[in-house]
Length: 503
Ligand code: TNX
Image (tube, rainbow, N blue to C red; front, top):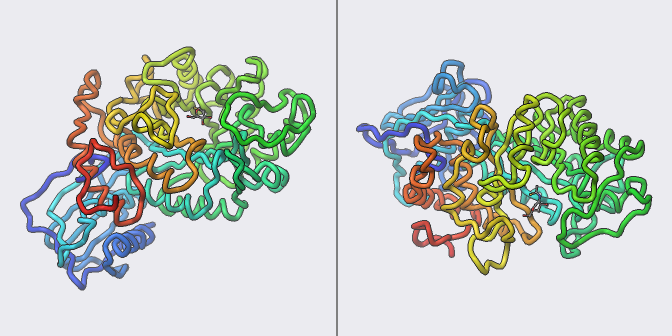
């Protein structure tokens, strides 16, 4: 009963594992101890069981976490793991701490979250598992509405259970600038002071942001910061007049229109600004990826856009990071080697979208697939919903979010050039973390399954191949964990949700 569906999970004929009163978590190898500490915390909060972590070989009835070179499924070092459950004990083996962490997420899902049976038992299984794609992402737009650190931590905890390993934070937009830039204090003082609807806004200090990056890293999630440019920049334009084409700072913006703002391009003041911002963001980013947006620049001429993006992307590369941008950046033909494009058009590409995303591949880069008509978490689930938008061929049901394949969207774009998938949550209509979670769960589980589980054998018939009814049954078991941990989710009619759960 696991989401995403593991590569191999077989029930064995062994007697079940019984979590007895003396059970411990035994660890060996680099990083195993911090993975074990998170398992201990999860068993405490999901299940009210107290286990100690010991750096000793396992005894009968213990849970062992072993990180060592030869552990885990061969050929899948980075994130693969094995998990064996039998009467004598539970054993998670992986070549990396990230793999062991994923093994722990599978184990958590195999433990009945209600924990009502005493003693707690887990049926004997043998699991061998690894991801289809290296990148499984969720995006949270903290610019349209701001979400404080504790909300983002809670979101990180919830996405980790689904083996999502990247959190893309959309940190800047017309309505708000949310990351302190020490050399440009007005960005947050002015640009961070409001939000869609005129609320108080907010921002992360660099210390808070470093804390978030570290919190995510412990859960084997890399934060991908996005500074959106040259459009979607009214908050910056309101903070620094010299960034504006006419030299005047506009008012702060609290509406939801897109495409009206642009940085002044080809200008020294803007170039100094870019160097300052990209330098500080790169220094705050231990991960490889730094996102520079580039979407919906409807107020920038094509020539200015191309020159601007090529310059900004070169600054990112010079700072030692790999640039990522929305697919429109494919209009450029001098992107740094390896630049990653994020595709956000529909399952059937419209306009230049296919050409744009293929341009990244031609330039030696790769693609992250976020088709808006199935992977956008801000699109309504059903007609008449109070929260969400419907522009991307909405509504988007849970089954629609599952029944597509990344390698069958753009002709010529196959798995060799697809880094992975991401489900973005835009927050024009989303004000609280509970609302954010309701838009995200359960649909992120569908996108996480697409990103992790093996490609369906028959991608021509992807709807049938995805086996939605089986997914829905597995998801119902995951929902017990959402109930236990207080994660909000939408109880869509397509799933046989657990009874007795919160409404
Ligand atoms: C388009 S898709 C946007 C965002 C909006 C979103 C609303 C993309 C790269 N940009 O600015 O928030 O639609 O669904």
